[in-house]
Length: 270
Image (cartoon, rainbow, N blue to C red; front, side, top):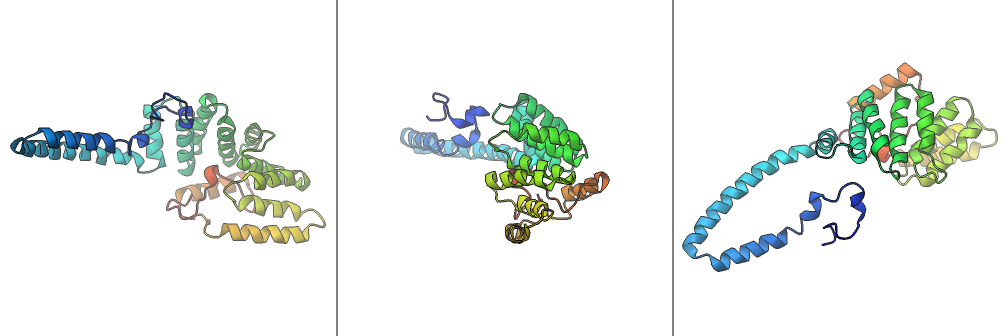
């Protein structure tokens, strides 16, 4: 009842229907059907019903097996999302993230630009941050800064945009101006990412009298980094190193990524 669309609920921002809401509730109709069949069908006919049910289950199992391929990886899921829900900001964003992780920055930029255009206003800052990150990795630093600023409202709700904008400011040789960006990233980052700690330590290291704070920040960053080191052999990180070399992105300045990845324990390494 709560997810029939009779009353508003949060997921309707993206879709009124979602199959996961039916998983548990379908046990009810299944039990009712079992009771009805068992109480109204004679024993000889019950064998026929059971045989037919077995065939039906086999067919449904085959369909399920093929449907499961949709969840093989993020890219496969994003492709399916775009097929069934074109023009949806979350679908476009998921596709952009998947192509970003695959190292195809051009395709990622295309999907994320579309996400910004069609996404709900509440999600646009996050999509703008993702698009800024792609532009950053493409070496289009001016465009990246513009998108990061669009993703940094006064509340600072997108910590990755704050951090990455601070990186750009620090690259311009302005450590004092970069510090507030890293501090806001620390304040609003729910993932406790080590990147803004490293960056803030780097910025303060260029300001006299901050030696003690630099040591504390570096220590904290190394604590948070345990178990989060990316897989250097993954295609994304090879592409990232290539982009950094091509566009002169300083390797000691750490960028932040969507949803907090690189994620500890991820077999993909991001």
